[in-house]
Length: 85
Image 1 (cartoon, one colour):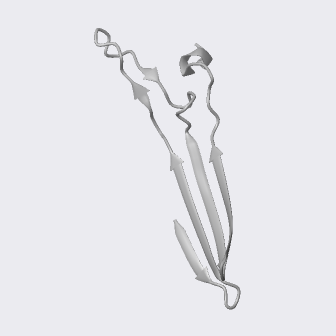
Image 2 (cartoon, helix red, strand yellow):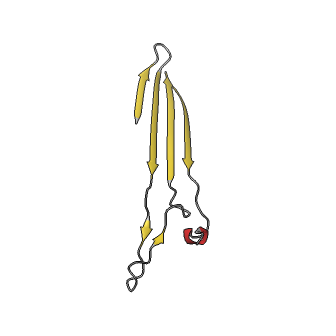
Image 3 (cartoon, one colour):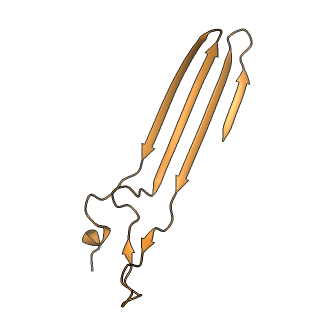
């Protein structure tokens, strides 16, 4: 989502928000057992939630910006290590 607005004599305000939610991320690596699922979601490098917010105020020759990035919780080991039977 993006938003741009002129602020009278101050300048131009830009705002951008990007949100990503992964519902499922798995790999089936064993061809002899096609039911064996390696769950990758929430392992390191595959977060469930992630968002980015970028703001910028341009006033004459000056730009004032701020970026915020959030990456959700991830497991350092494999997901299967944390499943309680």
